[in-house]
Image (cartoon, rainbow, N blue to C red; front, top):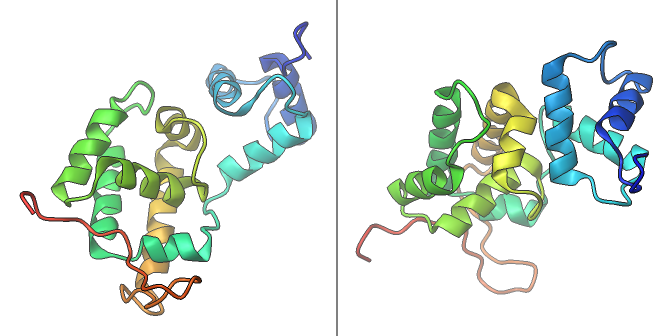
Amino acid sequence: MSAHGKLSRDDLALGMQNAGLLEMPAPDAALRWIDTLIEAYVTGDTPMEEALQRVRTLRSESVVVPALELERLRSRDVLFFLDAVGQYVDDQPELRGLPLEHDIREIALEFGLPAEAARDALRMALTGESDGPPLELIFPLLGHDRILIRIGAISSRLLHGRGLEPIKYGPDGKPFEPLRGQKPGT
């Protein structure tokens, strides 16, 4: 631990090496990744095991999306939006420093999705969580391949089984409507 009690880059690198999650010596790129992880997820009192679990979660190829959230994503508009984000990511040489706030909003507009809802859908597809650090930190932590794999996994999950046919009623018994885009001007 550093002098102020927060896990330092060196502490986390050593913990990752001891857990078999990082080679010795750690490459510079891995140390930059650890810096991003600390910025995104490590607070003053984050225990080492929790940080290591976050590393394992970020390195996995898919996430578990809660059932009701998955149903919320079950629409053509969201599917096409996620595919477009995948193409956007695939076209980027570097994922650090992207103007994601602007770019995600513009991609969402193509499919008539409200920017905030689209950002939430993307976060859910990539992390399985409804909140967390900014996507500007998530993207470089996941990297090109994991983002594409996770988008592919969620798209596959949405298309198989019932396909894009949403559930009729939510757990509260009220009619359920997935996230849908609206044509401009409506």
